[in-house]
Image (cartoon, rainbow, N blue to C red):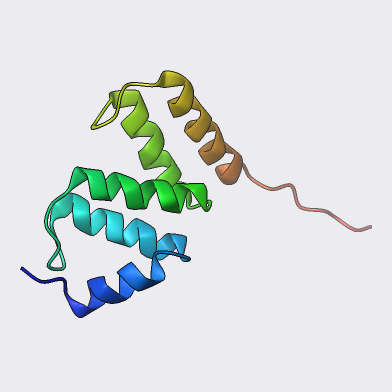
Length: 98
């Protein structure tokens, strides 16, 4: 099975674009777009997206560390990622000018 053109483009973009890295991780998780199913590759790309601020990737990485899905359970790291998610999802206070 060969990667689709969409997957090839995502592979190229994923090095700098966290959205592409997150998308690529999902395809590796599910074995879609001509990619073989690989939890390790999924984690690699999801971590790359998370490190670049992608909130869904951060949430997933936190869950992986909490559950020990393919990595050693590390609750401290899981909480760290969860805090990053919470920070991004916290409503911003709007400034009102009088």
